[in-house]
Length: 112
Length: 438
Image (cartoon, rainbow over all chains, first blue to last red):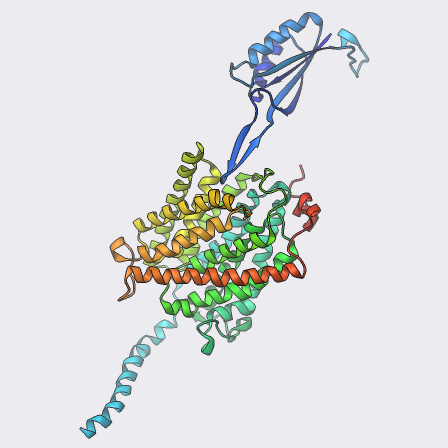
């Protein structure tokens, strides 16, 4: 099993959610995050006082899937979240040791 | 020869007496009548000017501070509203408005302490005295409240109250008397229809002194201190714009043509100033900002205030343009260059646009520029000189006395909250409350 974590532009969340639903992903976790990459931050100006805002708001989507789904998930996210402009985000893939469904006590792939 | 010499001195006073009293006898009764149209308008104008402070100015300022200080500025404006109402009624009105006899040039008298003699039948001009007094009360409220912006986010609430009471007594009331109460500036012939000197330059210079004596906010200018809710600020600025019709058109104290023209020139100057600031920022920074257009509007309202009874529509456009341009430069460039922390730009907007407006009042009052005309025998240059003197008098007297009051409070109970309280925010440290519990 793998945990796929994708940092994306906030306005792309709906597209990503739809694309993941289309390939049969049954659950995702969404977190509002801030950070910087190559896009850096932006500047704000209030009556001549300029502030550099280093961290931009992003959305982090986490999806736990079976190994055979990983490539499809990466493909779906990449296609849905891409604008071609700087700041589209990144996808991280982790090995996932265990999954437990709290209600039933199921574990492993059964719990996904 | 002898006879005529003896009779002349007798005839002259008789003739003079006849000429003086005849019109008074004829119009005496008319003067004492309340005009319901004027009164209806002045009741409305009074409400509009109160609306400028609470909630207009309060929201304008509340949005500009950080979230941890939002309640503190709302509280300061509200407390000033209450405190100045009482001080104006107890002694401010009397000292500002009544004849001071031998001291008339500098301060009024004590005849109307505690509003003595003001009844439902008292008349001032064509309106009830109660309406006149309350209308002027709303000016005594907003002027000190304007100063709040300079020391926002760091002044002790108790020190603020004491400062405001002393400033009202020693600065606002005397200058009101000089300009509007028949004092020496009025005698000089200065034009200030709705309060360029009394309100805006006065508040502006006091604000500058407060910013200098209190010192910068902790972390200024290195730390980012962006406005926490510009939505509130724009709502506040819009309320100020609307309320200002009461301020300027109400200053005519009647519902007549001058009041109507005051409304027109107020709208035109403000519209021009809002666009001036917007384009100035667009050119300088690459983008037009909502804070910029709202601030520009306030600068325009300030600039047209002294001229609103005398300037014509095209003069108003020029005044709005100049007021906003100078305020823009003062607030966005000069302040940063000099390094003082007038947190919400009271000096930069009210002081600077107030001075520009007061001087240009002398220019655009001239008939040749569409104004309502200067007094007989007064040239434009002469009027501008008088305007300049009234500005300087306000700056020097207001600045000096404000400075002394601030230094005395600093040396006794202290002006600032502790560093820890400042970091925590004034809402919690001064009031045990938070603006946002989300």
